[in-house]
Length: 496
Image 1: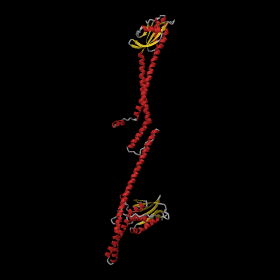
Image 2: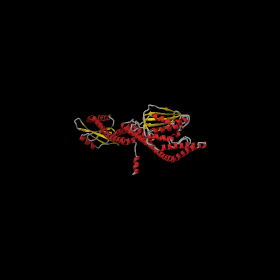
Image 3: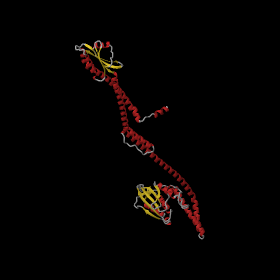
């Protein structure tokens, strides 16, 4: 069954061959049958007409021949018989008396008819026609009774015509008919195929070419709608199908990207959660020992007033404890996601608070901080402590990049978002590490100079507010950080 099914699938014809088999071939057969029937009918008509021509000649010489026989004028009889050859195709002419004796003949050899047959014809006085032999030739004979002036039978006239002449004529007509029929079939085939190509073939080929280009990878190619309405309908449906497939593929790609992003975010969240738990544990475990060390260092400083070496040692211990306390606070900030307490804020208010928090540190590094923003910017809703912490961390990151640089803190409204930006003229951030800046514990500073948690905390605060943070190159020559937070509706008095 499978083999037969495969054979049936392989036996497919092109549209042109299908037209030849199912249209042109039946038409050709119909023309041939019709032509054969028409030719047969016409042949019979031709044969009848040639017989009628012979009868007309016989009638034309009947009276002169009867008169010549009545007067017994041999010369007149022969002249009358010879006049029968005035038309082409008469083979021979004979005159017989009442007893069937031949009186005169003109043309070919004596057909030697049966006398009894001739006498019967004379007695009946009827015209007759029949096929017979004259020598070795088959002829058609027409017999006409002759009578004298009194109406008495006087003899009979026989005119013959070769059957081959009729057959030759009919044969020529047949050959011409077959030739014209063949020419007609060829012309018809050419016209049908030309019409098929102009009306359908070239448009179907356009469809096939378009499908082949799409199959070859040109997914954006579309078939032009320039043919008959039905074919254009097919092409339009095919184009719409391709558009739907392309839209579905785009949607699948978008969903895959979203899924990949969500998976990445989930992994990052799990990673951060694990790091946060670890950091919270470390901060908790280190808190008590550091408090003890700090207290002992303070007591040691009070007792070692006269010993400069001990004083310097206890002072250094105290500074390192303070630095470790800062690290612990950063770990706690990173690990504990506190509930936001949004308030109605003016951007300038938050900016000035953040600058005030880092003013001493900026002065120590000889860094100037400039503000750039609209003092009339609209109120927006945010947690002031968390947002100030994020801006403070970005400012510290810029201040610690290098000494003697300029930093600019700006704010603006962009659509439905409040945008804060921190630019500096420092060394900038290489492109290859920008994607890792917000990872916990990743830092570009020297060992002991940073924990790598400042930007991670900023990233967490921004995400808590439903915003975005971007890093790039500043027009000032250094790094540029930009925070975009949604401008929510103004909070009511109760929410404040």
